[in-house]
Length: 102
Image (cartoon, rainbow, N blue to C red):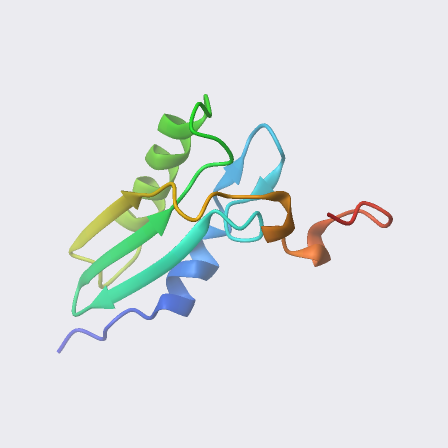
């Protein structure tokens, strides 16, 4: 019997994916809106900092790479959404340097 992966496990691994322009991982940056795990299928709902983000392809490929290396995942799907729009207030304040609140 295959043990089902949890959203928490996926989120932990997605912290390996950095937005190269900002230098913060996509989870703490607030780009991951949801993680749905159903049996061995995982759907990650993400956004980008802007619709014209030049790193969209790179970030998507990085997410796919992370998911493909996780055990107990048969299919990984990435859904890119634009609503709600991302804002700097979504950044985890713990990853910001002192005095750089949003």
